[in-house]
Every structure is written in structure tokens, then in C-alpha cells.
Image: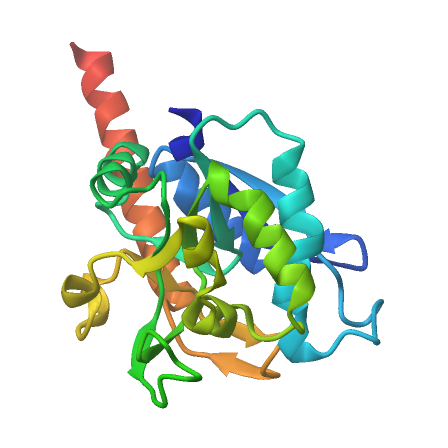
Amino acid sequence: MNDYKNVYILSYKKNGSWNPVLNLSKKRFENQGFTPKAVEGYNLKKNPEIKRNEIVYLNFLDKIIPHIKSKNITDGFLFAEDDAYVSNIVTPEFLKRKIKANNGHKNIIRIGYQKVLAHTPKSTYPRGYFCVGNQLIWFPKGCIPHLEKIMKMKAPQHLNGFFSKDIELRKKGYDIILLDQDKQSGNKYNKYVREIEHISTTMERTRKGKRLSSIARNNQRRNNRTKTKKRKFLFI
């Protein structure tokens, strides 16, 4: 069950401190029953040789994959970016059911993403789309050595572009799919994972998403419910 409970969150440190948005993401995962584990990636200022569109790709390849290989995973692992904010229905039990139902032993499953754009030609976009967002992704254990080898052969790029366009894993019996695309398209409230509003390192501008004021209200309501339960217990 730990493979469906542990979430490895890619983030970075600035002046020795974690990116502030990480704490919001971790707290939300914890509230939903997950065990979030931060993995430190490259900092652009300390690594000026890395281009902005390459940073997440290289962090995943150089930081996440080696970290996972050092762990005793059984079925696979959950990867998240530090701006991920899971919805109320997303719990370890919910994801385990979804992953099992979607052949999670053979498919990389993009659980949390922001939008899916139709794209041609097929030579560049063999799936016919470009999916924006890497907020939460499931990776089966067996695909890890193949994925690492393929990523090392490719030129670093936007990670969501790589997962949208690359089909090399199919030759090894694995594929990359979108979870419940029909259900998650359209209304932002249907998404399993929202993006926390933040200043994007790769885009150098604010990415709209779940507002900090909204997160604060949600946390306050949760705290109030917890206090109410404790008071009721005292009077029993």
C-alpha cells in the first residue's frame, strides 16, 4: 500500500529553504492520507548552464529516478510537482483503485494535469495531443530502467512535452496514458489535481491556479471541524 501512499515531490531550495509552495502541497497531501517526501532538484541560479525548459526534465532524470532506485518499491511510485493540490476525492485508496483499473503495472498514468491541447502532425505528436502539467503521475516499477535509458538518449526538454510526444516505451511494453480525460476536461473543479498559483521558474511569470486565499479558507474550515469533533468527544 505504501507505493500508493508515498508521494515523491520534486522541489528546490533557495538560500537553504524549500520553495514556499511546497509546504502547501505537502500539507494537502497529508490531509488526504498521503505521505509526501520532498526531493531536492537543481536550482537554476546555482546551475546557470541548465536552460529553463530543461530543468524539470533533468531534475526528474538526475534526482527523482536515482532517489526511487534507492527505495524498496513494490508496484511503482507517485511523482508530483511542488505546486500540486489534490482534490477532496483523491486518497491513496482512490488512486490505488484507479491505477489498478488502468493497467498501472504497464502504464505510466498522468493523474494530475491542467489541459490537453489537440496537436498535429502525427510525426511530432503521435498521440494527437500535448498535455500540459505534471502535477501527479504514476510510474510502474518495471518501466523505470527503460524510461531512464530513453530519457538519457533524448535532448532535455519540457517534461510534459516528453510525456506527450515520446512513444519509445511502447517498444518495451509500456505506454503513457491520461487518467479519466473526459471527466477531467472542461470545468477546473472536475480535476483530480489543481495547480497552486505560483511564480513559474520555467516561465518567469505567475501561473494561475488554486489561490492561496482559497487554500487558507480550506485549512481553516478543516481546523474548525477538527476542533468541533474534539469538543464533542469531551462531552461524551
